[in-house]
Image (cartoon, rainbow, N blue to C red):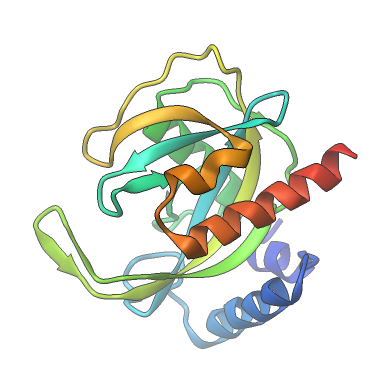
Length: 187
């Protein structure tokens, strides 16, 4: 399916997602380079929210730039297969080789502000990530590996304790939204 159609067909979960979907679709109409970092204002990213089979733990990385525990993901860098990007990033950032895609459907659409920061010695100005998220699952016994240029840790965190590990209030709200959605999938 065409990536724009995938976003157009997404059914928002709440008012925030309605607004963010509209914003993303507006950006798509305005810019032809959202799939790359050439767009300094906003660009597409794809992430995986990785849970265990029991859905009571989340696999997270300790992000070097933000100095906090976070989900996996990254820039699409020209690739319009967002699910593929989410899985690729999850593999690179955690060392896990095998992921189960819980659903091919988008888990969440979000516009995430990124503060200005240094990356590889170069300053990156503040911008927006137009985030597409998917729900992934993997076995807790899979071997984990740190990707030193991006993170300093990889571990399973109890799903109800994410707020104790993340120091980003806006991201905690996002993870809580994911967890609400997961509960509805289970029930």
